[in-house]
Length: 79
Image 1: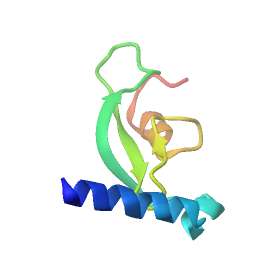
Image 2: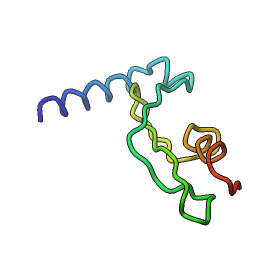
Image 3: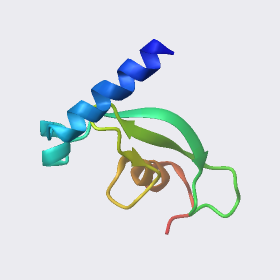
Image 4: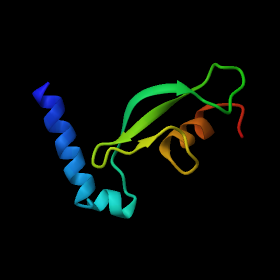
């Protein structure tokens, strides 16, 4: 519990202080799970869900992000 609270406090401080990654859009992406690729109608293709370890922002597959690149590179049906 303390570790989770401390981790959240560090993430909040990084974001509020305007970390370089957050300011420059150079996120430090780490995979935190997965979901079905929304562009593949077969349901047999997935993409990772990412979170920035510095500022805490999530990427669920928006264009230009690493999740969208997963769909583009791994799935046969493309948008």
